[in-house]
Image (spheres, rainbow, N blue to C red):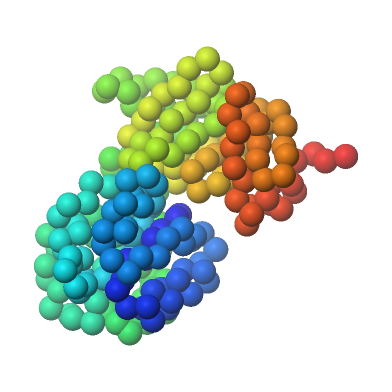
Length: 233
């Protein structure tokens, strides 16, 4: 999962970032001291999880939630226990952490988010057990795809683009949900916004991959794992 931290207190941002870095399945892709900078980021990028401080000057965490259009899960952070009652008004709030944040409660909150993302009833992609096929929901119509025909999957805001050889599908879901449904021996997430079919790689140069006509970035943290997956001579 990728996540961002939104908190006006620098110490709180550092603590949350440190705790996130201890989780192998969690990657911090941004930390912001105000809601507006977070909004600008979310207009360009998609994240699975947002750590959101309730009390921020000018634009509170609840103000942020009321204008947020992203389907990201939310973990609220605050030193005010009374804010927990108001949190129940929002469906995408997965957990509530009281400052100072207890590491055990933090881990439980992350596990809860992982469970929500993996079994969400609004999930639009399902996998046929024991096969390399899955279905996508396009305009209330289920379309079956063979995973071997997928070149790559690209995150675009609240949607993902599934690139085939001669067409692409736009699906309202998250990259992490699709990743959970794909056979790991053939697919690998090379960047927070890209999952690729390893068999479709044409060329690798420095920190980029060529698939079809697309040049795809490789995250520095994932390059060595990618190299281990390839049959290098």
